[in-house]
Length: 145
Figure 1: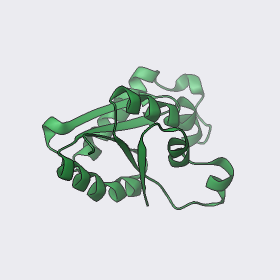
Figure 2: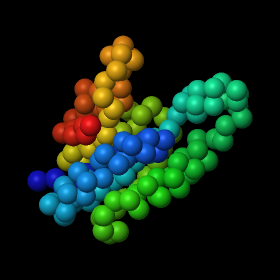
Figure 3: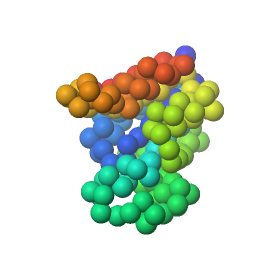
């Protein structure tokens, strides 16, 4: 049923990664599916993460940012029990929602599995990445809380 699973990982949120591990492991094993792990970062989120103390021009270029995030993601993927020949790892820089949806189309994902925090006032007012993916995805989305 699910032959290709896309798992976006926020490398700054260990708790969300821990939430999805048993679900991804079980669904992959049940279907012998390929699992595509994706980490997305954006230049502006890095700027805000450092409290605006670093000027955007001081950041590594997009290629270097993607490489840094990819190395962090590779370490997080080791927490999963997915056979190596079924594991694909990639990172990108851009809008989280847009990058997730683009990769889902590119790999022809049957399902997108991502962790999400419980809604708070800020997510009701601003929305969340998970809500955006659910709203715009052309495939099934499993949000894990």
